[in-house]
Image (cartoon, rainbow over all chains, first blue to last red; front, side):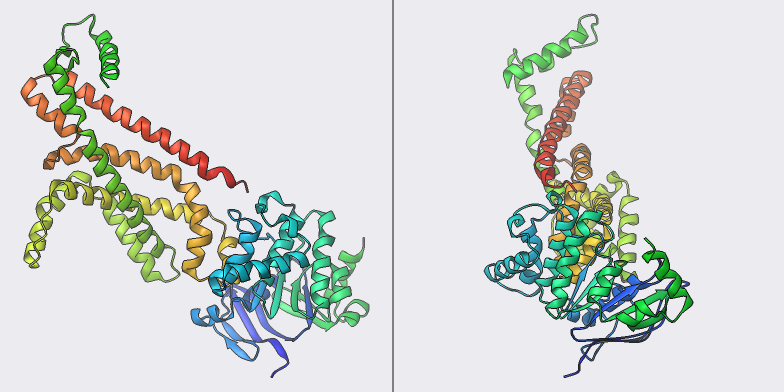
Amino acid sequence: MPNTAIELKNLNKWFDDFHALKNINLTVNKGEKVVICGPSGSGKSTVVRCINKLEKHQSGTILLDGKELTNNSKSVASIQGDIGMVFQQFNLFPHLTVMENLILGPMKAQRQSRQKAVEIALHYLERVRITDQAQKMPSQLSGGQQQRVAIARSLCMEPKVMLFDEPTSALDPEMISEVLDVMVELANDGMTMVVVTHEMGFARKVADKVLFMDQGQIVEQALTENFFNSPKTQRCQTFLNQILKH
Amino acid sequence: MKKLCLSLFALLGLCSCTSDIWGWYVINPNTPSGWINIKFLVSGMGNTILISVTAAVISITLGLVVALPGQSSKRVWRIVNRVYVELIRSIPLLPMLFWVFYGLPIIFKSMGLNIPIDPFWGAVITLAISDSAFTAEIYRSGIQSIARGQAEASQTIGLSYAQSMRYVILPQAIRRILPPLANQFIYIVKMSAFASVIGMQELTRRANELVVTEYRPLELYSLLILEYLVLVLIISAGVRWLERHMGSDERQ
């Protein structure tokens, strides 16, 4: 039983001529929380999107639980549900109620009965504290509530790993903490998490490891404490100074 | 019915006050022969509706079947979609109707198949195929108007491509494509008039037949136009009702 949840080896990704990821190496152990930060366009979202195959990689290997993930559609299908994903724009299904959003995956992809799916959904709605909104349409909820529903929707598939792609970037400031609270609880429960975020407070509190990316490369990779207290590279220092100034 | 005709008749009659070019007696519901003529003309309505609805149902289904390969990541499927759309939508309706009605049976026969094509199916097949190229394009724009995040979100909760289409993309797309699809349906209703040239007893054919015996083209074709107008207005009202009831829960 390998202890590694995700392993990226020399991962390269191009968008046409643009070299978006350059030799990315990353190991995420089971139960580990990794935060990826860096300026816009540095490739941090692309790393996460390669891990769950929303993007194809051109070279290098991605290992999930020791099994290699290729761009082959069978390989892609086999991991869906094992890797949960939370998007910046929530991406809830606007034509379905909250409950229907949650049970769609378990019922259609995992072929569970409606009763079982509803049971699971209620359990996770409770964890993100929005049980009373189950019959509403997503558009009737606030941004923070929508994002918590999106987290619950991913959790309903009982994934082994959760990926977060700037989960709080599209939220009003006063709704950020309700989403981060849910994520902290999830982290405390031992979920393996890879989080792309600019919330350095969250990183400090939760992350085991922080990655700093710039121009498609991992510039710095360190244990959280070391990362904040003694960043090694100049580029990373500048970045931290900029975002921690206020 | 008689009342309605009478009032329409009165309306049209107004135009004729100052002129002696009109001879409304031919469709005067108060005379026995006029009433028989009206009944003869209006009874083509059933077939016009039947052809249009059948063709529309086939076209809406066929359009989806044609549109989906256009969304594929495989180039060869996209080419199949493009070739179909470009080919079909560049063939004018009337030549296609002749080809299907007079030509296709010969092909069937050479293949040893005994499939007769009657005027009804000749018209339906032609209208459906001709329209499906446009329906396919409507589906394409509808599907593309749904944000990519929706497909990505369905993928991450384990839905297959087909499931994602069935439960996430199409239910959202259908609300947006309803107005253009309704437009196409109105187009089909009007184009169904071409079925008259292969002997289908619908509105236009009936009017043509009566014109030959009564020599009153102005009045009879005026009524014919009025019949299509009423039909299309009823469809428009129906579509608006449908839109209100389907669009109510999409507010995002």
